[in-house]
Structure formats: structure tokens, C-alpha cells
Length: 205
Image (cartoon, rainbow, N blue to C red; front, side, top):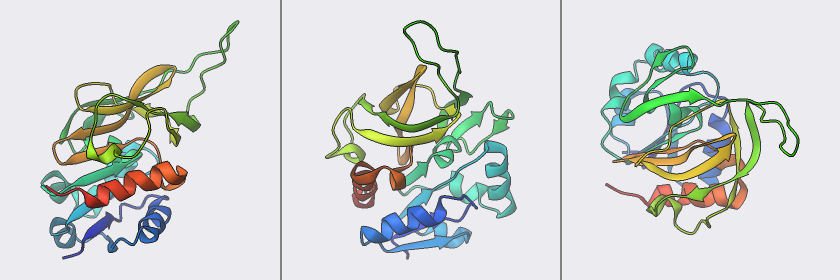
């Protein structure tokens, strides 16, 4: 059994996430093998890009069924978090579905007097506002800065652990049972991101 499996879903952030986990001393393996993913102690699903292409890659690698059925802790990062939802309006895509809800596009707006323009994609550093306590956020301060790159975002609901504001409020960190999600990039978020990854490595079901 591999302690932590990083799903090889073809995302450009795969190598940087692996490096971050190795810096934490994690026993981590990159895999697209359904059996290895199914028997891992915990699973991380990274991803960047569009929902349709992300789901297509998972389908091509015959990973849809195994990812839907995981009972161990699972962490989705950026697009990986969005793919844990039921769907995305980005191409009206059906996603993996263990987290209820639909991911929707962030709204852009022009600059007005006293207000800067809201640009999409949302790219750069922004702050987390905590909604509820969870072991995934232990040791991270409310208002901590993390790094985002995304155009679509998940709704705020009872599963939201932390929010962020970019034109509107969206879920930046979520939990639904054994499924966790971070819309930002922990591997690019300095000590805050490393702490979130380290916390995930201690979570058991």
C-alpha cells in the first residue's frame, strides 16, 4: 500500500505538487493505476485547465469509477477540487459528483469610480476567510494569503471551510465527508500551502 497516491491526471501542476509533498517527507507515488489508487492510504487529485479536458483524461485512463468510490481521505487541488463536484458550467460537464453542487464561472466587471476592475481569470494572491474549523486548516490563520489561478469556482454552502472574495464570494476550501478541496494552489502558496498539505497527510478516516 502506498501511503499517498498523487493521481496522474495529466495536469501541469503534477510535478510541483509531488515536489511539495516530498519536501514534507511524504511517501508519495504518482499513479494512473486504478488498483493502486483504490488501495492508497490517501489520494490527491491535482489539475489545471478546463473541466471537460480534465474529465476526458480521467475517462481515458479508466479512473472515473475508482475516484467516485474512494473511502479514504481525498484532496482535490484547483481543477481537481472542481472535478469532485457534480458538474461544471464550463462546457456543461458532468464531473465526478461526490460533492453536491455545480461549479460556475466567476463574473468579471469593469473598473468604476472607487472600485478596481474584476478580472477573470482570478490570478494571484488573495486571502482566506474561515467559515468553520477543520483539521485541514489547523495552524493556518484566518486571513492567510494563498495563490489562485482559476476562472470557475464552487458555491458557498455548508461544506465550505474557507471562502475567498473576487467580485463575489466563493468556496476556497471545502469538505464533504472524506473529500476535501482547495481551489488555490498549495504548492505555490508558501508556508500556508505547505501547512495545508502537511495537515492533509495526517488525516485518517
